[in-house]
Image (cartoon, rainbow, N blue to C red):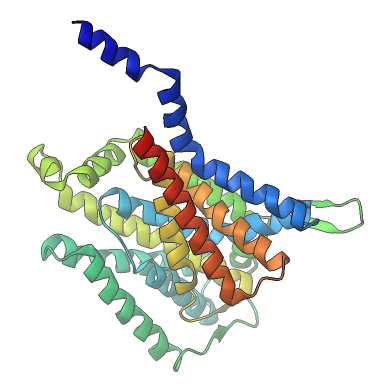
Length: 338
């Protein structure tokens, strides 16, 4: 009995509680440190206009990362989010070019994203092939389809775009004049990404589907034995991921008033990084939406700060990679000491 008392007192010691908290806040501390660094090195970094730019540029990446959360939560990975992003945008732009309305174009784009998810889930669920291999193959096939439909990768321009569709990426929900006479716009895409994040968080944390998806990710075999329809829930995850990423692609095209082939590749690795960074903010090491948003802001702030500092684009990847290694190393050291 004495041993049990001593053991319990150790678990409740302030030192271990501090170590546990440090483990889960190390990513936030790293993000705050980067903000402070850029604040002192770049005077305009924390200006309202630059903050609006960071949030606007991060909105599309946030949607891709949120979509990816569903697949990673189920224990899989989806490299074809770039294809869902591109095909959703391409289908919507072609629909608008053909004279269809914005709502029809939006639905067709979402359908294209869902189709990519269904294609992936057929091989993963029915044929039991690794999600990594399936989505890698889909990535190659999808990018080839883009090149075929765009004559080798030429952008599809829209000289005129439906105002409602253009509002997705260019519309503003909050505009105000700065003290210097300039104008700062907070884009509608920020609000849309925030809304999708809240809905996704509610689904994963507060619904039966979300809880069972976590169970599938923890142990697929145990989930099957407990009666969870693993196959059906995995299909839902792929479809949701495809649709959210297609929406992100359409927002990107509405900003450019054009479809640029292979543009989804730009967001792929950052989205994966943001999703896995989120697990460092969870006590159970689980993927979560709030942590993913913090990961997205991490990449957005670093990219913006490095650009303002005049760091070459070729070196930015090195800096971002080293920062990720640093965060993971700190988490590992604190975890081992705990």
